[in-house]
Length: 339
Image (cartoon, rainbow, N blue to C red; front, side, top):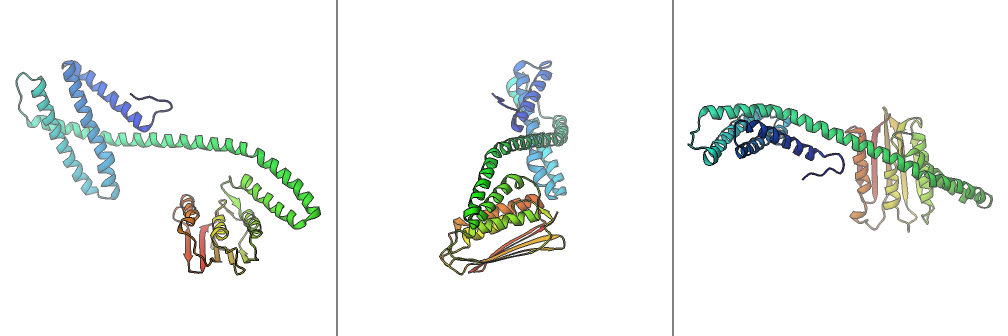
């Protein structure tokens, strides 16, 4: 028994359709046959209809036609419908002779042809069935996306209350620290800017490149205070800061450097970051030395994999993402179109 606590799923809708078909066929047969004969043939016909429809939309059409094998698809459909028609005629006649006939009847070509013609009509209906399934699936997906978007907006509004309280507190601490320790005050200011970026900028679809660069510089400044020795770091920027790009695209490379590419016990850490613009594309490259002790495989790679999935959603195949481990040097390169 189907229970619908919310809107029915695609599978539940299909069960409802086949249940309706079964009832309609049963009612149409009751005028000529007994109750159990009508039930039996309604169930048999419904099963054959479902076999023809799902055989096409789940197997023949996607495996042959959608892969460009049109001639093979047509041949397979012809064989499939002939086989289903002959099988349906054979099973129907044998059930009739076994359960309901007073005198057994022989198989006739007319009966087989009638079943094949009926199968052709059901086969044509399978395309309508496929379109209906795709429509309801798309409609359901759209509703889920809208629900998730609404919930995300509600959560964002809730989450903004405490951060803004924290911003005000950080501003007060910054003022006090500025009077006693200007360097500490500067770090507090960078932390405040990073938090504002997360709250105000990261939910946006596009952010200003200048804002993204400032975010990276703030992050680098805060990470450097955790390193015992100075880092030889250069950040070359040769691009228009007025351009736009999705937020947090460049962060993964820089974060990986400080997570996996810094030897905190060494004074020879070297990082080179380059951000250039060429022919309407943004090229972001990072190069860093690697620790002498190799990192475990399980501690790397997830950030890059997640970034690649996000880039596919944003740009399709119109991007380049390359990472190279050259022993003691790690190079990462990202090439994306600018908005």
